[in-house]
Image (spheres, rainbow, N blue to C red):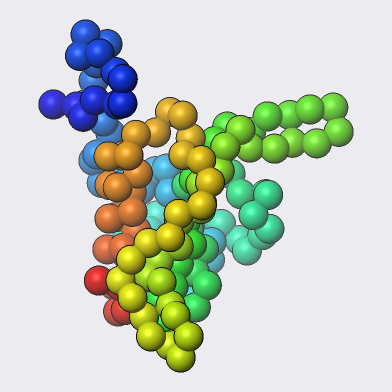
Length: 144
């Protein structure tokens, strides 16, 4: 059964959230590095060249900050809105993990900054983060 959003009435719920691994793989883009290129579990169509964050596609993009520590930043971008002279995302949530403190002391938690796209639930975000953690642990061995 679908988790209800805050203030959502049960009669408005029509479908379960998209939780299949194939669906998750299709909406998550990975900025390339050596390990991402080697990972055959990430479809080639989901690997993107290094670029600036404002050029990231709609949806979810993963950027590895430090392969040695396995620190990652995940960008949840809403739809792109085009104006006459510029394009921007309707919303952006940045999630970083694991948290690294001074002197390399790694803590296993997340930091959040921004606004979750309105078409995404917390459950969906959680499933995406679990998928990313799983792939990152295979690549870097540091995420738990």
